[in-house]
Length: 352
Image 1 (cartoon, rainbow, N blue to C red):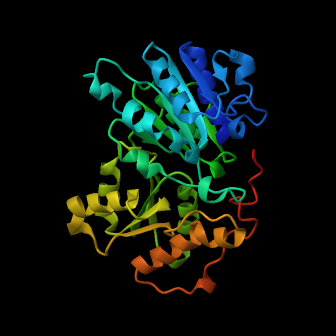
Image 2: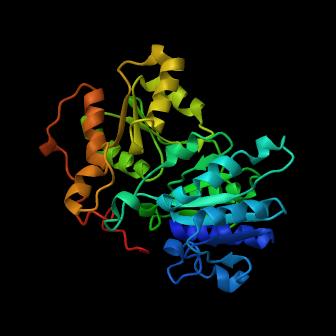
């Protein structure tokens, strides 16, 4: 049976399902049993499963990631939450030099089934050290799988698939998605890791993106219909392994490519996707491919700077019009949202 759930409820339900099915699954992280429960994603789990399976941790990210790794070697399946990706930087030695390499270094004799949940994106003026989007860092590392869903349906299915997987998974959740509502089946199900999804078919230009920027791409595409521009939007869902076939086929059809990233352009996923298209599908391109990313500076704190730093649908519209060789003035593009800058739209109500 399908019913509507918030994204954060879908995450919590996925964890709950896996903890019920497998007593070796446990969750740890700073603030996991708090009243706000990591944006609502862990509420009630400690009451249901006890302190031995749902536990708070000290501010010792590197050490606790090492503890989680060690527990996999004796048969456990940890889900560790560092809340913001910025906090996980303190555990990069464990993630990159240990977790990602363990299976390889020991000739495949031992798997490391660990899920590391990281929150990305803008919110409440968090600024340079609490609002980064570093997905591409992790996607660069062999041995890690990197997942970034946008819908509640995919959030539940991909998280269950991640917990069941025997490889280390980096699971990204954009803060602005936690209050998104969508249809989610009541039963347990999985969404395949490494498979993208066409969320809107089109014939004029391919937009490749992931996580929260899928929603902004959809808003932009709706506006562009008024100019008889039909956008095909691809949600990658997984950054490693990357579903190259889905966007290569799309570019064969449209002949135009725009990649929208949550992060800076330099060394980002946009460069990787464009390189793959140029290497494999150069003959189909009618126009040079284009990538959109954040300005090359740290994430600002002040609302005045943040409102021009983060990408919105208006930025995508301007780039698509450029790629389509059409002219448009800024005044012709509606803001599409004019409320407080630290929330995506007026439907957003938390949890904060």
